[in-house]
Length: 355
Image (cartoon, rainbow, N blue to C red; front, side, top):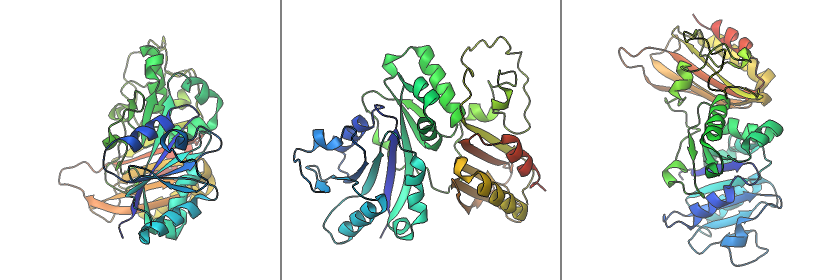
């Protein structure tokens, strides 16, 4: 059977996950969705959508969607759902997991790679993170869970943007991009999001597209004259040729030094597969718990095809992608998003893997 696509919906308390979910569930899109709520006493979606107040763990909704609350382990719930679907007792085409606002999406994500039975039945599509524009600055400053949720995202939705000034919204988007340059951002109003931006994003596919915001890669407006030059996210080997930003005209570059950061490695030289494998194995061993998401498109010695790799924490996979096209620059690009990762050690180590 084709694996069932799964979307993980995360975001801090009050960021609008339930609003977005209700909209997705009640819209007449003709899709049958199973929702798993991994909630602890937060407002439950059932109260509004589901009339029947029942002790049953799995509730069939009027539009054919299914809703269940996790009372045990996520794996058990996923197995139950897959089993019921196989037996024809439940009908659904995809799963959305709404995590509690205090959750680190890491362990939820890892479930889909660690457990063979789950990996066979389901395909993790993406992590969507909602960020509340009004309270984000405070939450990101105070709570590492909120920062991790941003680091994990394949797509970021900013809610309550109408409650802040354009300058505040711009500063927030700038900050989020520093933490996670590979997730597109979009301000949403009352959960009104086109389904094409919620489902089938293929965030965990090993494919040849490494989506990093081009501004970020070109380091077009980032300079080494920040207050925190160690927080500067230059792609490898680039230098700043802008006039001095010492007076910091944008005013919002970095008044905070988030522990969730990203950096990019780029090189036009080929990588040595054995050296790279040893190096990545070593850093994942040491820093795995702090490596949230990492992904790369690599030019390797010994193959005329792109090598695609990505990982979550200590789990890493790679695959051969399409051939490099004639005349296409064979540039390796990797983005690492994590908590206080030693950028210098990573970049120097990767440098030593080049031929």
